[in-house]
Image 1 (cartoon, one colour):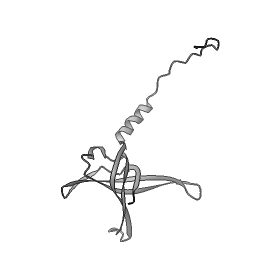
Image 2 (cartoon, helix red, strand yellow):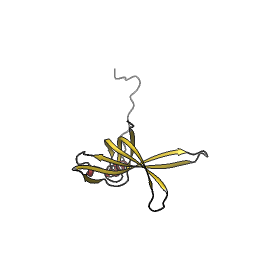
Image 3 (tube, one colour):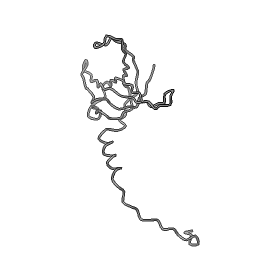
Length: 135
């Protein structure tokens, strides 16, 4: 068995479908990678993975666009001919066995505003004289 682990952001809200009486949740995950090329210039590459999660209750409200997730599952590579260009293309698909919600976009915004609020100045700590040790 091949197992793939990803940490990335959801590209759109999850789509729930019913297949033969079972629920399947489909969502794309964008995995970003930063690296320096041969010339030393910092580049960023995004790899999209189409994920499907079967029969896991009602996770749809939590899987919204921009949410950061950790997913683990069995990968599958599919080749196809693009309808628009006629060129051969490929897709990386993942049947998810394990999912963890790392953060949601609204929580990130809330935390950003909390960190932007100025912290009131704390009272200065008064040093004790060296000859007045507490022990």
